[in-house]
Image 1 (cartoon, helix red, strand yellow):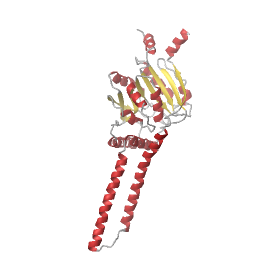
Image 2 (cartoon, helix red, strand yellow):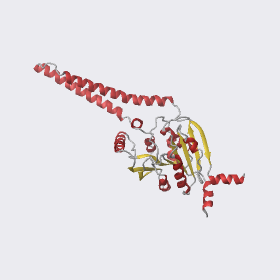
Image 3 (spheres, helix red, strand yellow):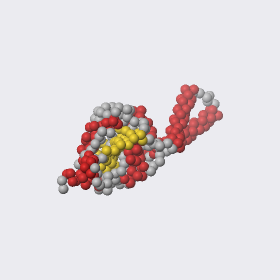
Image 4 (tube, one colour):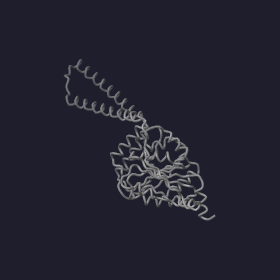
Length: 334
């Protein structure tokens, strides 16, 4: 059977693999990404689709994506009505995916598309989730690598579910895992935790993450801190318990210290002194109280957002281009 016959047989079968690519203002890198991604999928025996999710780009990225075609894969372009954030864009991709296996990959080419065949091999072996763990993180500063490692250790110490360290959004999910995720009603989404929460059989592949192909990252330290707060508050209530424990500990210490002062005054007639230490204690207590109120506010804010039940995203347009081979067959039949 020649290559053309194999391709024709594949495009007539059901979609096996969906590759989701969320992007925001990535006009420089998208053509290179599509060229490499389409080449990898052309070599697979299964029928594939590429789903590009435009998260409100303003640099012409959407117009570039809408021109993309593939010789053997369906190319779908989904445009959100505005910038909802990467977590919402990935959620949109999962809802619109049709494949039995779904792979999420960033548009900046830090995650090599050439690893997709290895991921598919593990999926064919029966694994529901294939995690891609970064062995090396090229192009990132020492501070970013160390802060990321510290965050994962902190998050896993606070949550009941284990979130793999150094595993980003680049991973494979089986259809049943995707369906469970799509049924989750929450609006405050930390996708790395959501991907890990369903469990099922998992396998981890290690790879060296490349430096960003071109352009600038959209994730500054302030956004990363917000994402870390989302991750902790979405999957753990231990910060609330920690605030309660800390309050009880300080109250107990204050009571014991007060009893010591009263005893000393009654027995030895010590005068009440220590204005500097008193101010330090007051400032410390005030700081802890404000911190605890802030923790409470984070959780109350999330309750407020969940209670409104607004949709995660709004779709402005959906465009689909069939595989070039399929399109040529349709033209011949017409």
